[in-house]
Image (cartoon, rainbow, N blue to C red; front, side):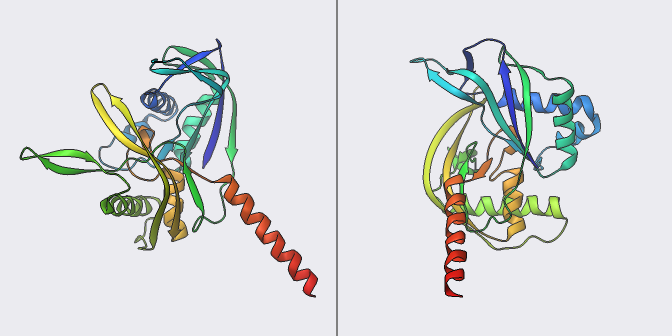
Length: 262
C-alpha cells in the first residue's frame, strides 16, 4: 500500500532542511502511536525491518539560497509513504485524516489530500527510480576495530546485502521460504550524504536501476523499501513513468500489427 500525501503550508515560501528524514520519521511514529500504541511498540523492536518507508519531502516548486542548509518550497509540499502492512497504513493515514494539522521543522502545514496509489502489476524487468536514496552498510576493520562502512553500487557486496535484506522482508511479509531469483542493474547512480542523527552520517545512493527476479520478492522492496534503514526514510522507489508509457505504447503497437495480419 502506498500513498501520496499533499500538504498546504501556512506560510509561503516554506523552508525544508536537506536533512529532514528524522522529522518525517517522528511524524509517522507519533501518528501511529496515537491510534495503535501496541503497534508502535512493536515497530520499535531493534534489528527487524519495519516494513514501511517514505520518500524525501518535496515541493511543487522550489528554490535554493546559496549556502543555506535548506531549500525554499512554494505552493504545496508533498511526500510518499509506502508499507507492506495494512495495519501500519491504517494507523498512520487515519490519524492524518482525523488530525490534518502537521508541524515539521518549525513549519506548519495542513494535510490537503491523501491519495492511495495503484501498484504495478509487473515489476521484474522494469526501470526503478529512487524517491529516497538507498542505504547499504556493512562492517569493516579500521584501526583494528570494526566500523560501520557505507557501501556503494561499485562494490559487489552492495547487491548481495540488498538481496539478503529483501529475502528477510519476504519472510516477514509472506511467512515462507524466500526465493533466490534477484538481479539488479544500476543505470545511473549519485551519492548523497545525510545527517540521520546529530553527528551520525549516512552516505546513500539515488539510483536509476532495473531489477529482475521473483515478483513477490521485488514487491517486498517496492512496498517496504530497498536496502536498509527504510523506516528512517531510505530506499523508497517508483516505477519509471516514461518506461511504463513506453511499454504501453509497444504493447499497443503489437496489438495493432496483430489486427492487420488477420
